[in-house]
Length: 129
Image (tube, rainbow, N blue to C red):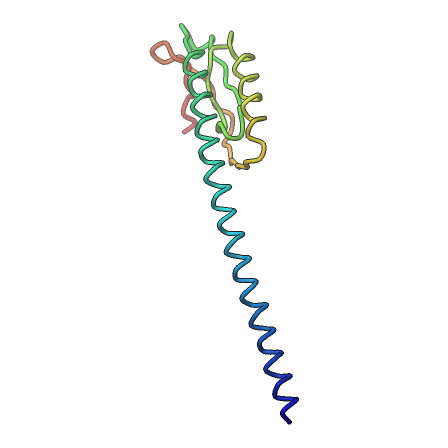
């Protein structure tokens, strides 16, 4: 009888140890995921600032026909408008920056491609409403 009792207690202790180990592993994994998300957020913010600066510097226009809509993708959003003469340059920059961000994921649900227009000398995206 004593042997059965010891076996049951040993089994319970083993189950408890496994359960505690799983909780500790889940906690470590969660902390790692949060740290990776923080790093990705900071990296994406830095890349986004660099990209936004390039879009601003290459968005001058005199008329809407001088503007083009680009689809830069992750992490720069669905669409941006730039001067047609600088579109290739901005697309190359977007790809170069995105390549530096491959270990971070993002996902967009983009609406239909908008039109570009020139508003007060700057290429912008027309509202699709």
